Length: 549
Image 1 (tube, one colour):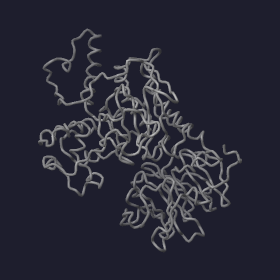
Image 2 (cartoon, one colour; image 1 turned 180 degrees about the vertical axis):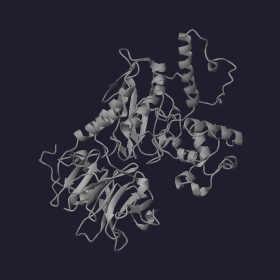
Image 3 (cartoon, helix red, strand yellow; image 1 turned 30 degrees about the vertical axis):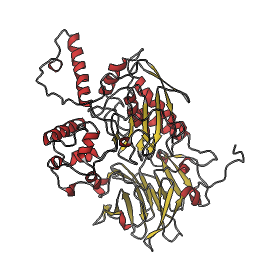
């Protein structure tokens, strides 16, 4: 059954199959694995590296068996494109890289395309200086020859300069307004450095279509999306002009939890323009997910060179390469501009926030992007407040936050660092921020909360949890441990708190759902939709008027 608004003629395969996993490992491949199984994470052990190399174009799929030389050559190409030491061995770093979130488009031709771009740059310079072409451009070159393989022919492009695009549907848990602005910025990123112009249309035929899908979506079984992580999106080269995004991902706009929609859209738009993957570390067209951050320009020299070789330079003026912080600030502003949902509910009520905790006054604090809300004991919700106005020196957004009644301190976690503030003055404590590694804590924790039965701070990360002794500021011995110690509690929770007077029961949140964990019974005793079932979250307020039409 065709979904309303689905792009037509989507039965062709993308240039990269996304989910093809063979059930067994080949003997030739096993001989190349040089690490012990104890070194690999469960995610790494579950992958079939040879199937991965076939899927992304390093090995020919029509050959059922590959000899050791072919596999080693393919591994070397993958390591080159992934900026890893080129050894030809499936070491732990190589297997970890294969498990990272990435684009589903094949890497076929990426190495060769990059070599052509570099060659064109140096050839052009030498010709302007009256010199002969460099050795790479001549026959019989002594430079390493790239292995021939099937790939999308170089030069597939649009033969017009004014292109239209349409957003077919919307991701869950993000408002259409900020998403539309983020998509517009992604297209502008490319028009700023090329001879292209883009225009959004709301319906009818468009040159480029962006759509969100779950799982199988008529692109072929090999291109079915695989849920959170793994393949984030894939796209078709000109002139089909489609980019598909995994609906199951947690998409964000401001670089906090989840995957930044702006950077992924900008990458996939590059494919719809005819660009291949790049081996350059700073390139937006690198096949692996790139977080929005850093001070450098969003587009590397290789991105700009690739698009200008297809479409030329901007018709007027010089190319404009804007740095990441410009887009980060804009995305934050756009998201904050829509801080209220229809009916007067705060934006976090749609099911996404970064952290939640409760202070000594029993005031609930909900954090999302660069703002937070407070919910009083009688259910009154504040307007969105700027995070940095109350807690200076914090990053733009946090990944976890918790108030500790033991020492009356606020703890915030982002990336590899921890911040601690005095509750009475909101001053950053001396010696902070500190590295999580110094405290024995994981990077990028899912959530943090003070747990009275232990008298310590608990942090969840994936399938494990850590316990921070607030007196010594060190992880307790024998941690981290498996999350199985908390029966019924899911992974990837984005917040947790215990409310005074509720028997010490712990409420854990993940997107729209909550789980109530009873420490006395050591099990989950209730679960449901927190915005509907928990009045103290501030999401059950009546609409401001009776006009619902």
